[in-house]
Length: 198
Length: 243
Length: 90
Image (tube, rainbow over all chains, first blue to last red):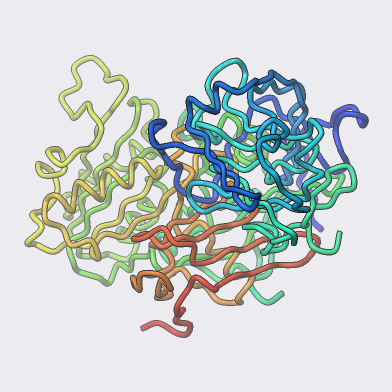
């Protein structure tokens, strides 16, 4: 192994009680993308929940009529950056699921552009997940998943699906876009569950 | 895993090209040589084992060893090291040469149009230097977009090559700021500018475009508007983000 | 930075493909499994700012390849590529 004198990279380590193993702190907000940024006009935008007793759908206005909250959370990307104290505004997934009768154990989030990610139901309930439409006090920008993305900060950020359009309630765990290609089914950063077999 | 091995390389010399751009000459025993337009991957390892890796176009002619020209990206992981820190004797790892599509041989007599956006000029400079070193006969037009005069890389070398009168021409456009008395282009490349400086599509030149995605898409679309066949335009897009 | 600049082309993964396949595939003809478009790998749309590399058809944007590397392993999905031509070029 050849060490390059004086090379350190830009990474910053952070307090171990805030920054999971193998992560570095960032001040900016890196944009990650697996494809072109979708642009669904708000008048056409809906959020749906399938797989319950009846399908449900909210328009943009209807989503905003629901009680929303502002939360400050740390986020951790599997590409090793972590960002502390990020501020988001959105509707809790609990609020949305209250409207649905179901006995599902898993969900799959589906998005404009075709991205999907899977989660156990308990990882999106009890105050752990939101449909977020605001970041840093401003409307969520398209490059960061606007108009709305899923926000599940206790898991690696690939689970916080950008351009989310709904949740599919399921009895079984159906691996999504990254989970079918090497990434861990659950993705807990504190257990460093990055890849298959971790 | 199969594939190209990493080679140890040593920085043999550096040249400050512009305030943000530097050329490094590398010594790499075992380097197999390259074709004009190819790139290589650079890997840096920190003392604690942390590694970062990026691709850089080779600036030198195949006749002249390995030189990289690197632009410092403000939030870069590797470029700040190569531009600001690395000095003679420092060691890095390289892999390559890489690329069989964005390559040009001086034996090709077809008229050549090179369109460069910022540091996208680097692989096109390799082609230009190769033509000079090998005595290539193809007429060449280089259309080179930079922000300001001080950002033009290889400026005096390009002037000198154009002054030889052997079929190599350079047209600059400065998009942000122009010096007093500037009579050249002062806007981003568009179909009208290309129409004025490039060959008519009917001459069927070979085209190489290199720069950021936005630059390359605009230039390629502009040429297609002028009637160029899409298949005659070869493109290479540089990332601006530290990926 | 424009988000459009996050899209690169197949030149950007020449080294990765060399590592995975042992071949320089930048000039290799490929066929999109969705729309049938035939392009050299260098012409395909490539996204590298992601948990993995995603290669998309430059015509229809369908995913043609996904490549993830981690813990010394590589996960490769070519199911969106109808055909990839390997071998010496003239």
